[in-house]
Amino acid sequence: MALGEFVDKVKEKLHGVTDDVKGHADKATDQVNKTADSATDQVNKAAASATDQANKATDQVNKAADSASDQASKAADQVNKAADSATDQVNKAADSAKKAVNDAAAKASDAADSAKDAVDKHS
Image: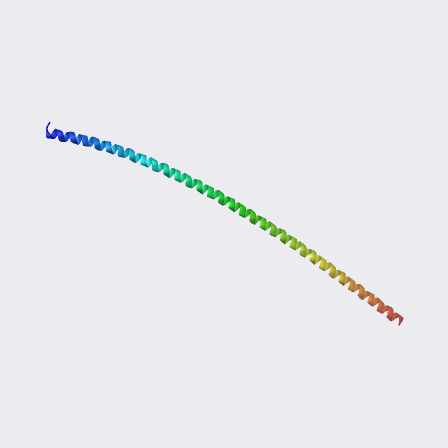
């Protein structure tokens, strides 16, 4: 075998080995990419799930806060209505008492005038 043939056979073997190595490297790269994609998908799903749960918890807290605020507002309205009602009753009672005092004073004045007239007639 001539030296040229030997070199050609070595080149062929090297090309064959190089192709095999390249094929294995491509397969390994594909597998790494698939694994990375799968891991990324799992992380994204976990993050989305955590975000959903956080949003649901936030919604529940907001609903509870809104409910408490509504209840406090309703209680304040009831207190204000009760205070307004009490004020109205006190004002009506004061007006009624004032009228009674004025009526009594007028009657007393009329009685005094009548008594004075009676005394003046007998004098």
